[in-house]
Amino acid sequence: MDIFNSALGMNITFIRPPYFIISGFIGLPNMKYYYVFVFFVYFVSVLGNVAVMAVICLDHNLRTPKYVAVFNLAFVDLLGSCALVPKVLDIFLFNHYYVPYNDCLTFLFFCYTCLSMQALNLVALCYDRLMAIMFPLHYHVKVTHKIMFSMITFFWLFVITCVSLAVGLLTRLSFCKSLVINSYFCDYGQLYRLACNNYFPNSVVGNLLPVLFLWLPFLSIVSSYICIGCVLAKVTAAHERAKTFKTCTAHLSLVVIYFLPIIITFTMSSRIHPNARIINLSLTSVIPPMLNPIIYVLQTQEIKVSLKKILKIRRKSRITGK
Image (cartoon, rainbow, N blue to C red; front, side, top):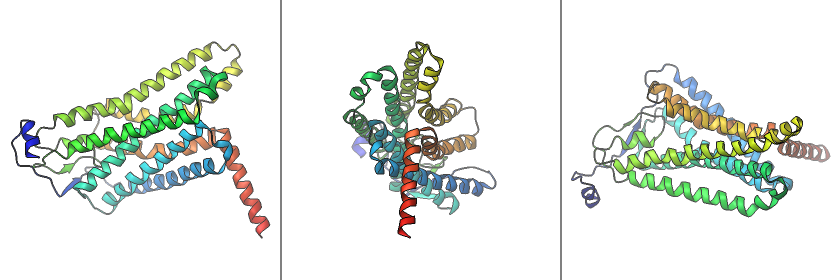
């Protein structure tokens, strides 16, 4: 480690702290009510995403490439909520502000992996909608199980590799100053800025991650919808345009819910209070996983039909069982 630090031009004693302190919100009263709300959101998220995953598994009609991506989104939302919310509640409701060093890096890894996968999963769903509208006659050729599985597998490997690199770079940092992280979790940017040796590589990665997992997915989705808009503009019948566009409403709702708050927070971070930034980011982390299954159940006809069918079968089995 000393050799590595010397290679970076820093000859200092390497200090790995036993823990970090998560400061959270500063000076805000009655924050426990906010965490009760977060727990309610978490509870609904778990129920909703488990329900969507169960419906897709139980109904063979939903074993299509599109619902492979929907299942993966529900899984990522569930994993992300379980990685983030219980730890946040433990820290702030039970005053366990001291997070061990290794636990903090693990916490960071899972949070960033799931948040990044949410964005890339929306790209996979956008690909499905783009092919369905632009190439309706060749949809089943261009969107197959193999293509969707390959896309999602690539996204997982890419995200895990990038986040692992980011976490690995944190292990070369020496922390001899403050150990207080001004966030609600082990935030990468807040963490590497606490180091007292050269953190330029971490800064590069910290600036690159939002480009890879926020701006590029968002711009690719916007570009796809511009193409979809151009195709729909050529459709003469208004009711046909409306019917085709309706198939995109669920996905568009997810895109707006996920990207809009993060983009606003990132673009206005220097002009808003730190507490407001933390609240915005925390809500962005917990609200989409709750709303995603609700939106898909309410706006996707196949899932609504499947859910009604499953509930009807269960009701009949209970009656006959009696």
